[in-house]
Image (cartoon, rainbow, N blue to C red; front, side, top):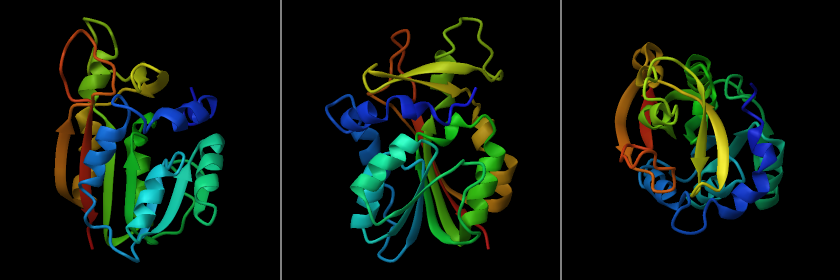
Length: 225
């Protein structure tokens, strides 16, 4: 199943509501923005899965030289309408269409978990970052994906495609499940210095079984020289 294009089906609706109201992405966006004090004027920044460009617009306001990547043609069209002068390309997280060692910062929010294998994604982020460059990403927490298997006998370690209801159950996306080991893997520890790992509750995500569990986590890491 090709999950990379699914946002084409609801790009306009997503763009209209993902930053509106209490049950939107406003809380996790605020949390993410609260950890990007390393973005300074002149920093060359790539946003992986930039969507409609709302985050890129914020990074630009901080003085970053912005570049975007997304696999959805419809999302890219919205981003280019918002930021007509920005370089925004269509492409895969597993084969980033930018030169090696070109970026000071690579960011991503709620995106790379749609890849079944994190290895090629991390390898490509490593490739396009300069030595000493910063990678920071936010992804769906594996605990949340475990509950989204909706099976009392579910195997945490078995990868499955699950239905993820987002933005107050207004949009359904499909994602492959992951374990924490997928993200905290050997490649990360061999090639990056981990700065922080933090887990968060997500008020905009579906609550399954009345449980309270982390909806997402954020990792920040620095590419080694």
